[in-house]
Image (cartoon, rainbow, N blue to C red; front, side):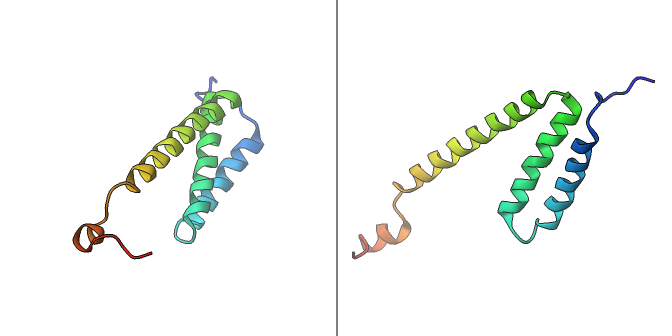
Length: 94
């Protein structure tokens, strides 16, 4: 019987289930931990589906780098946009 998924290590499947459980467990408590376990779960999902650990990690790393670059661009741009208080009352005192 042919399988849709490539043969995978049982440890990857266990890590996937553990990451999914911890992602849901930390969803309301800590966004940082939620995002960490979400990322891990996505990497394990790609590893299970694709069967290539290098390609799965590389795809996720590229997405993370693009996300970080966008975040820094938005934060950098937001610092130069004057706030409503500055426009109405002038600069804030030092």
